[in-house]
Length: 189
Image (cartoon, rainbow, N blue to C red; front, side):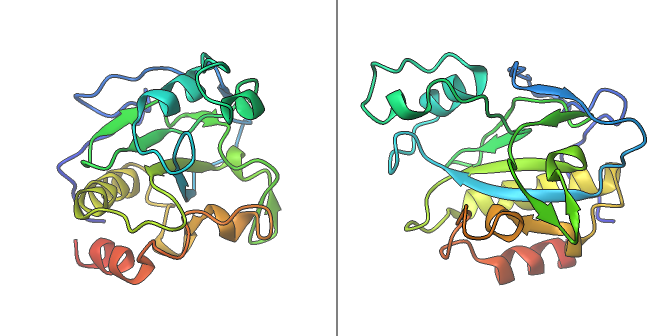
């Protein structure tokens, strides 16, 4: 595994040098279930807006339904991810990796249901119709390498998009996510 400039503490599941905003939308992983997959998502709130404040509020369970008409539809949902990568490449952690974030929903990977149980969820600020930034790819590569260093069972073959584990229900990270570029970056380190 490539050594990343980022480091995740295996005991706490926290990214070193970073603050965890600690979403209430998480719980313990089932006993005996290994962390061996990573799911890449894309999010913008409201759709098409790339500021992180509403996303943070959503993951923290304090999204104000009156701030935007779309928020009325989602404000009561209980959703989180382990990490959010903004358009400038900044990282916000919401759930320690050793805990189960609620990012995958009804999902299946290689015949295994309940993907939240064994995966790490990473959200990129973006949408299906927008290209992701160079800084996001750089941070995603470093974060992936840090995760693979801490949990070598997260192999390249076990890094998927939300659309791969919930086909027909989810489309993210979408057609503008460059899988070839990302896979090459983690292979070359």
